[in-house]
Length: 137
Image 1 (cartoon, rainbow, N blue to C red):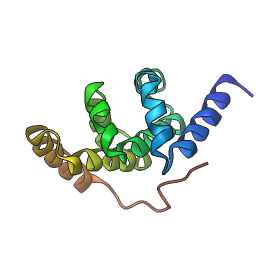
Image 2 (cartoon, rainbow, N blue to C red):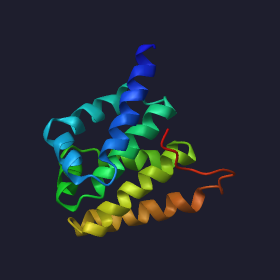
Image 3 (cartoon, rainbow, N blue to C red):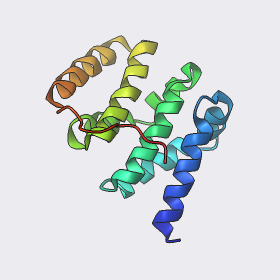
């Protein structure tokens, strides 16, 4: 296995471990996983496989209501917003899911209005995919 293959495997494992598991999501957040992912997003900004797995795990975290505040606190929202328009549909779809969870929690009304408008405009530009979007492999 190469380093990238090992990273992809570990990210898949984390994505699956955090799925529907708030305790594992919380452990990930409290062990500085979000800060690590923020760095990984910058390091692997063109690797769609790694980005898909990172956003999948962030989506799992965004589904845990008491962990949403951590997504706001690490300034990851601008990175996720960028993926709505600058990424392949798989990544854009995951980014929209994360932002939708943030909007649902209604933590910051002013930011929510801005995110909602940005999301709407981005989604209107998407082309219909010719295959399933989300895969967990």
